[in-house]
Amino acid sequence: MSDSEVGATLAVEGQSWDLSSEYPAAVEDDLSILAGLIADIETHNGALTSLLGRASTLSVESSADAVSAARAIHGLIERAATIAGDLAGYASCCLSVDSQDAAAQDLQGRLQAVESRLANATEPRDQYLSLVPDEVVEAYLDHDATAPSRFAVEHQRKRRHELLPLEQETLVNSLAQDGINAWGLLYDQLSGSLACEVALGNETRTLGIAAASGLMLRPDDNLRETAWRAINSTWDEHVESCAAAINAIAGWRLSMCRRRGNGVHYLDAPAHANRVRRETIDTLISVAEEGVPLARRAAKLQAKAYGKARYGPWDQRAPAPALPGTDAAPIPYDEAIDLIAESYSSVAPEMGDFVRMMARKRWIEGTVGPRKRPGAYCTGFRKSRTPRVYMTYTGGASDVITLAHELGHAYHAWVMRDLPESQRGYGMSIAETASTFGETIVRDALRDRADGPQEELPIAWEEASALVAFVLNIPTRFEFERNFHEARTEKPLRPDELKAMMSAAWEKWYGDALSEPDPLFWANKLHFYISGLSFYNFPYLFGYLFSQGLYARRSQLGDGFFDRYRALLRDTGRMTTEDLAAKHLDVDLTRPDFWRETLKSLAPRVDDFERLVESST
Image 1 (cartoon, rainbow, N blue to C red):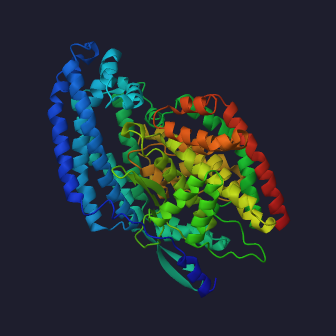
Image 2: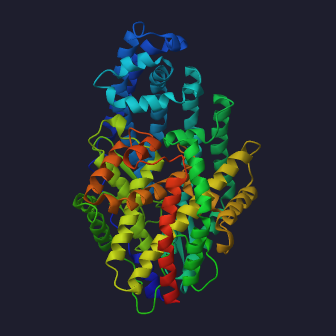
Image 3: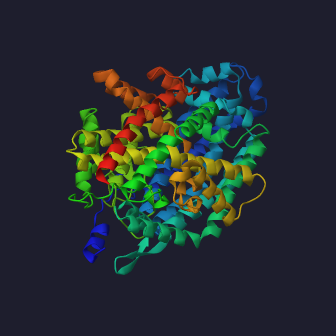
């Protein structure tokens, strides 16, 4: 690689985002307001705490004062949660861009005690609504202020058998800040501060992990492998810290399962949080196993396109190889915005307008920085009800797809912005629907305007990459996390044991398509360290197949599709996934039919990809 090519590799980046409309001017004011709201909640709690011991025996008449107090607390909680969420989100946004931002670190530290106090303050209301008889809950919901929260309350009551006594629940909330949450913060700090030495052409460069990861979006197979090995070499120096963190996080969760009851499983919490049944998860993973041959075929074709027999871990975000006579230059950020906006507009003009608004208002962060954390996400501010998208944009085709993915999340939040606060939260499995739907829109729009095999190959490549990622890589993560939790019930695992377990998961799912496993994927994948979420993997597979099934109905519904799609997104905060699918798609997610049908519909795309690969090699 020449010096000019090295410069081009690192030169492309996106815009920086604008957070000034939210903070920092009002940080101190919001902290003060938040403290007052929590104090008000604590005052009202007196009407509830004295009743919790006999909550299951209360009548509507004997609980009249408590119902009134619970309603008042509901409003206070919504206001407090909005402010706390915005403050935490702002700190996280700042630290994502600069992991050493002292002011953001200070705010995050101050929020730990506040968030713990707020969690404890909300516990009496939550326990009260979980434990009282149905008729008392109905009385509580029979009011304009609380009626919109019906689904949230009823869903919460499904886990009432797991509740600990109030004093124990509040103790858990307090200890979590310096327990499980502290380990997650430690990992975030570590991932944002690491740098690796990457050989680029005739020189070696010191790059942050996020910037080095961007090199794996390049069509130079050797460069991708070099970057991957450099990143893993850096993580390997910190495996003891990572092992301590991942063992502590899983150990905490397993301890809580045991404390909550003998029948409580480590998958119960993520299933409940995703508003999906365990039965549906089992069916989903089982059907994914049926799709392994198709996904492995796609991976082998990707390897063949690069003139090799097997797929490497560094190929996860690889672009299509540059064909003779084609321009493999990075895609400028503004061009990526135009591509995505035009693609979204093919579904509905308002979707394209939304993408351009996000860019115009600078609600997207895409810069490259030495202390920037890796990864991509969509977040938002609850007071203004405006979304933000975070990523590191370096110009690869995979970056364009990632941006389309995150903008799908943002659009999902945007169409729900006028709903009551209690109806705007949704499970991660459904959250991935709009994002993966957005990816498909972009890929198909690009395919429609492709001129010949040289332009078709990169699009078909991205489709194949999605299939490999969702049907092989995501189940690999699930396999590891499930096996890890099983083993962690016996003892903490050493780094070498974690490496072996991760390698085994790679080999099980990728099989003979794989050149070598990624033994350090457990260390370098931040999803395993999100303290507030466990098993943040199956929701991606769910969202991919669910959105593909939804997308397949686009042609069937014709002009009525967009209204149906928008209505589905708006219902995601007030239904389980099974009920949502039954209402809007007329399918039963606990049965394999829908999932199998969706996987089967992807086979022609792999056939087409094979045709293009064969013609180019």
